[in-house]
Length: 208
Image (cartoon, rainbow, N blue to C red; front, side, top):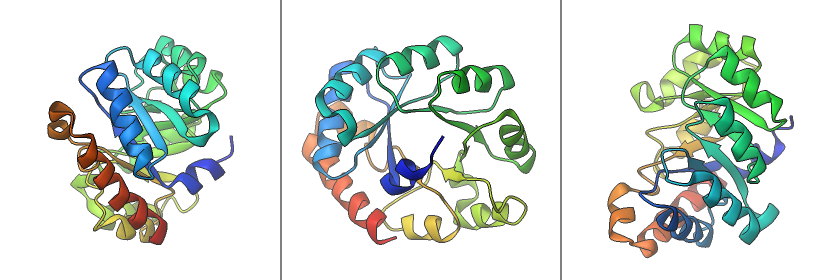
């Protein structure tokens, strides 16, 4: 599975919305701000329906995927809904196999070197370092020593101010959640604020 699209997208918005409609409105706001990598988490109600609608609206103009994938059924439903990548918060052999069976780009979560080794052994295309905020860019850089060829994507603790440090430390892409699309903005339906944050991330991501 090619990593080219992920590398060119650079920033994935990790979207945890309180409703399907909120997720759709937030996704529109993110795209308006220049963030086209959209990870719709399964903690969002009716996540497959959200992905299906976004796929219909934007097609290949966005890089659409599913996050918080914890079951084989979720992986299958996301693939059927138009997802192009799948993200799990952790790594399990049976789940990774089910995710890979969809033919989509697979990212599974890890934090320790042992967990990174397991993700690689089970066939993950990208290892999601989560929660990356615990170690920061210095920790990601340290992981690069024993794992120079493993695509690593930090998620958690990524901001417009430090995004350049993450890429300098060796990130293939970054996942941004609350700092990009906050729970407060979602609750207030402040789509303009989400677009504003997306613009900051988009500019910072391109220049990083």
